[in-house]
Picture 1 (tube, rainbow, N blue to C red):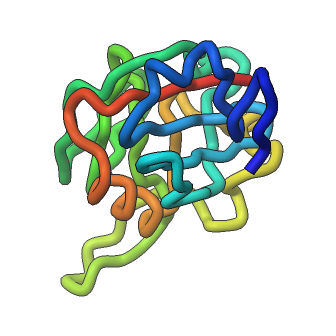
Picture 2 (picture 1 turned 180 degrees about the horizontal axis):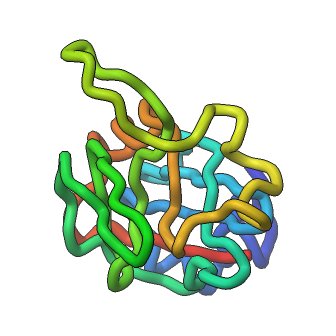
Length: 153
């Protein structure tokens, strides 16, 4: 873990007081999400954030709605997800990996190879943080309404 006078991990010491207990850090530049619990990293996972024309908003937010399964509906899309964890208007963390349930129901739209890297530059989301299915389900087990979400470059 990177510990200096200015940063602990990816978190600026000026923001640390706001980020105690369980919190999430979305790093747009590295296309990665980290889940912290009591200063321990519980999960580090690749993501796909918003494309340049519909970027993921930066800032410090709180989760206010966690539910699923459900459809995400917007202009030109209707996508089924197992979990949606909203933190900023319509923006949130959710599963997007293509997979098939035991009952044969298929959903998701991204192959695992699309997560992380530069996918977001040409085929990013509408502002949400797309996650691999297993990572999203792990995240769901640790967060609750009020969990802080820091989105940064």
